[in-house]
Image (cartoon, rainbow, N blue to C red; front, side, top):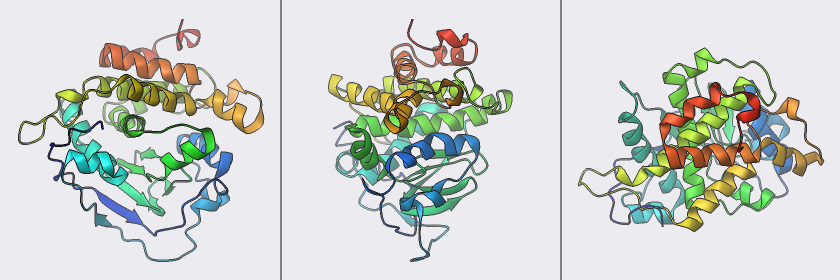
Length: 297
């Protein structure tokens, strides 16, 4: 479930854009693709030329406008279709953040079909979901959730998918509220601005999910249903899956803290849960706490 089946999500106005490239599966992106997800967007490096799934091969054409997501009118549609689920999350996130940020301006959301261009490089399931500050757009190829399942055994269910969308929305909030300017990229490492930025985005996602049943559609119907314990565990599992230490252990069998860009699995779980339980007020602490206090104590 997750979405209220009776909710009206017909005004999501989200477009699908891309060239319909072949989806990278278990034999395509592999662990290198997950590492590209972690390192690429933060460092401004487009690693998709090195990944089998990121090659569009020139087949087909890519429209700068794209096509509107179809058959996405109700919460039931969002529960049953991943493209509709991601598109509908835009409505709930915008309502939530408009209540939290004065003068809130929403980001654009592009659902990627295979691969498409962005101001930050190629967007594809090989690059992973990301937010691009120059064009203020969130790019998500929903087949990335399949990669999480195939490569790391994550269940990546409905709420876990919404956590990932909410995390990327959190980067937009950091952009428009000045965090990205105040704490620019200063390299890698467990106390780097990059790690702190990612943990804060996890906290933002948790805070939104903690209040997502409060937002209503134009008819006064709640968009979302309260998450079940199993759904929350699934979302926490997604946070664990994309921890730097877990990814490094899976890919090379060793952990290199000086190369961290997103935080450990424990830290990512902790800040998601902290935001969920305590709300937005706790999220600023990711930039003020000493590095040895960025995780559970």
